[in-house]
Length: 395
Image (cartoon, rainbow, N blue to C red; front, side):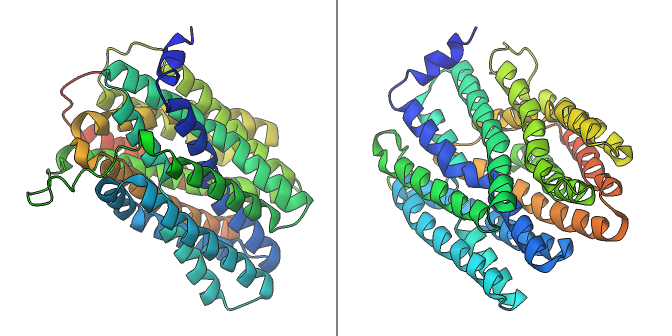
């Protein structure tokens, strides 16, 4: 049953860069949550915690495309190593500034620097898969596997950072994130054999291939909406558990959400799809919106966990389909950049999602704040169904 995954992982160097990528991007699921836990613990304000996390995420989103463009031009090794050093230093300084009680402006500044430098490991790993695998169906399987890896990251990351921050010290979760990021990203950078290499040098005298925006833009709009869902759900879930004096449940609840997505992503990679990726995007984001709406009325930890599990099943198939659309239509020399555009859009969604939901939590409580991710997902469905980006082949 799992033979498609075994085949792609048996290709030279693939399991090594995928494993390094897991640890390199594990902080994706840890840093913003770690910021919320640290700042809310030290200041008592979810609004402030949301704005600091938003500063980090907005800067990350704003510079993601540049990271992808530089990786395409100069190769991944150099770009990843430099970015990792700046990221580690900046986040460490942000942690110090919070603990030392420095000005909120300084805290936000270091958060922004850390976000701007965050290495785009996910885009780099997926670009390596496209470089290493030449069969379209195997590329789909590889992307599904990476989606499963992502969800494993979202299962383990929030649980680790929440446990360390609540049971040991508020700084411990972020410290673990920095160690994982440094080791994984540097290991990935050292694997030069599978690096797609610099694409633009050979053609530096000619024009760059055009980005197919009529295809990329609708996928970016969907990613933006999903980012709002992710950012809002993280802050609301932390607040939901804090309201009930059960802060240790925040990580496991987010992990349950990721388990739903992981399961659906695993199945997605095994299915021989007849529908086009754009159709799967349209159906997936609509399903995500419909599963978010009932959370407004949920008051039980156990019922919330069940609903998050159900809603999570819409996430991975939608993300896999958006990446398939990009992989099929973006020129090879701009593929990392194209994938970074989706991550950028998602990052721009995460930040306002975290901020808006934090403000609603402060004013009305946790459960009513689920209106933010519900509305965002339904708007994303509108964008997906009206955009109807043309796709010429089916993986």
